[in-house]
Amino acid sequence: MNCRFYCILLVCACVLADCTSLSASRTSMVAQSPQPQLVPDAARGASILTANCASCHGSTGREGGVGPSLTHENRRMDIEFTIAWIKNPNPPMPKLYPSPLSEQDVVDVAAYVESL
Image (tube, rainbow, N blue to C red; front, top):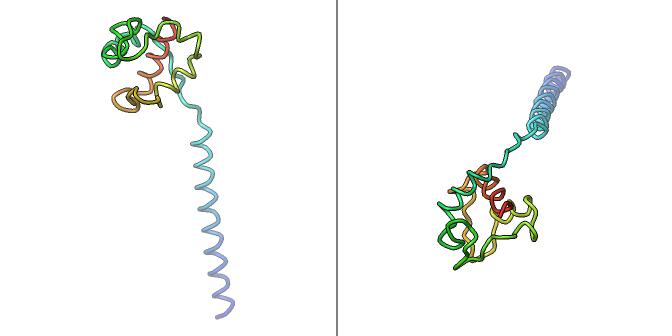
């Protein structure tokens, strides 16, 4: 009986160890899979900016008003910084990501802003 108990315990330990190992390998496979690269589309970004940002930055982003003109922002920020800023701005700029703007929308707007 004592031997049988230890055999069952050993089998359970092996099964649990295997399940943990499988779970860890699945997690690492998901973490290692590359994210699809988003291709910036500045023309699409212009229309998104007009629809979502014009009330503060003007219809083309060049006018300014409540918010600053976005002309020459590319001298202050590269596209990665611009994307990060759009995703997580300082007040009074509203946070529009992840809703209503998607990841692709943010990349497109950043590409447009970088072109000004």
